[in-house]
Image 1: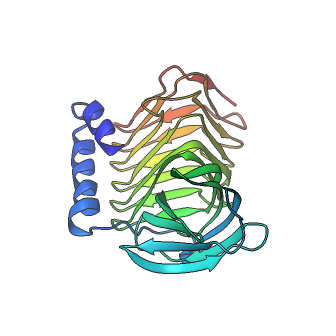
Image 2: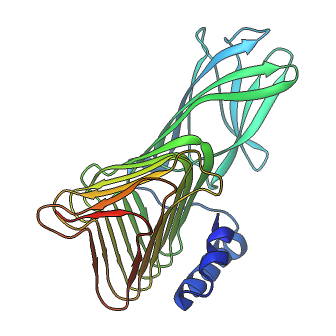
Length: 295
């Protein structure tokens, strides 16, 4: 996802080039893996899944395991209804989930984030071997990232929901980055939907809808930050909605930049008499074809 962004914006904002290069170095060079920070809750991933069907086999007593670097991190077995629960703390943005039955072993890589509850319901096909995902929903607690943290989720099979519980849904600063690519992305009960400052980077891409609902600013940026909400390369039916109840839809300051790039419908709305978009300093906002609605 990052490569697509870099190609498009290379000549627009020099600070964005520096920011993307720095975060690339952190992600793939110096750190080697992506831990990132979440908000409270022990920073564990909790998967509550169901094997809905095994073609030519029972759904009970299947060993379900999580592997990290080819090391079994956690395992359990399905009950008579095919249900299983796994709780683990990952040091990476991806893990391998494995289903082992009496005469088959099936596995695949999945994206994970800390401090999240995940619904993961599948059908297992034993011959030829396949894991068919029927339902994948991530319920993410608020995200806080700083000091070179990175939080990356990349799966267009999943719906990704962030509940701010009255706090900022995504809060990024200090050369940290958050990248989420999913089927749908929803930010609810946010103080501010996205708050980015001091070289923070936030990239959200969805095949279908991106929705941000905030009590204060929907998106607020300052000091050399970049936020982009956009369709994927091959969107299905992408729409973007950014709404504030009491403040601005988007507020930018310093030399920060915000870009919104929908496929279809897009609205940015302020609330309580405030503007949809407010800019100060040398900041920029590119709302594309979005309808701007002042409160």
